[in-house]
Length: 337
Image 1 (tube, rainbow, N blue to C red):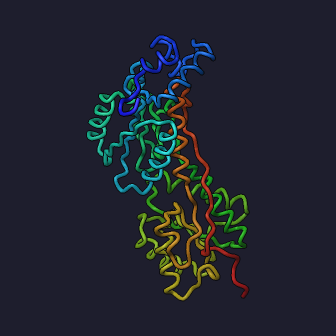
Image 2: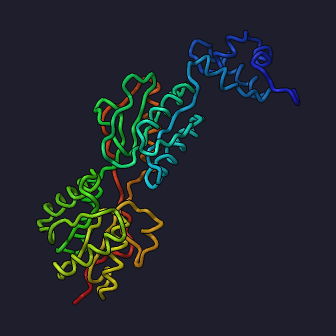
Image 3: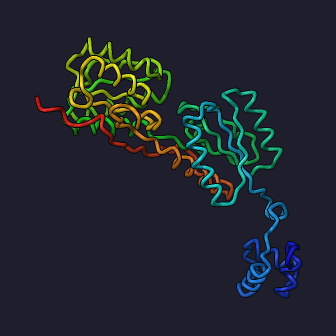
């Protein structure tokens, strides 16, 4: 057979069966005797037969391609989710078509039409934030799973990080370090992520019987805001001994100003960030204790649930995925006076 690719008829004649039976055996259909299947698989192996994906798709009604539609043009949160999803698809030998709508609804509709015209078996829609987004599932002929940003339709399948749980974990850690005057600096409150993380902080403080040090300070998701918030906080609450920041960018700016003001992190003030964006969290001085949303795992899980939905086993609802605390040098018990 050197130089010429084996065909299904070669496999059938070597196994002594009809082409239809060989095809059924290779596609794992149940209406073929086990001994026959073994004979066909042995023949296929001997001939190094590679089934044609297009022909196989015509038989099963599936093209073994899925669409990934993202709106996160910066890629900070979208890329880890996409990597995790691609991992899972690779394991199932699915081809992935990636489209970036850049947060534009018209572009999103255009990409949806393009993906459907390619006869994808299903779609993963990756949000640019954890805010609920309009469902695209209605009137679509294929299943859709939403990742990072949930669909606003509760009958859709969505996977999001558990920000309430992640924030509570961060604050419990500060309490365990013996910190009692804990402040909160975060991003804009119109983001669900900021509201959820504040809720987690409140839950953990209430559990520990501790009052928050001052009001929540909310600004942009930026290092500049972190620096500015540190100035404000050190003036208003010079006794503060820990700060939970709503993002690593805010935390990095916060640490910078605290150091400039002659206070030591973590001896005087312990600081926790959020996102585990390693470009920042591992590079600050000292490196940041932070909450990792496990976005690759979230993407991989979303992809596995898309496989299930393609098989007719959808799992509707918003599924919250646990976060993880990454402990580095920005937290420790207070220095002995």
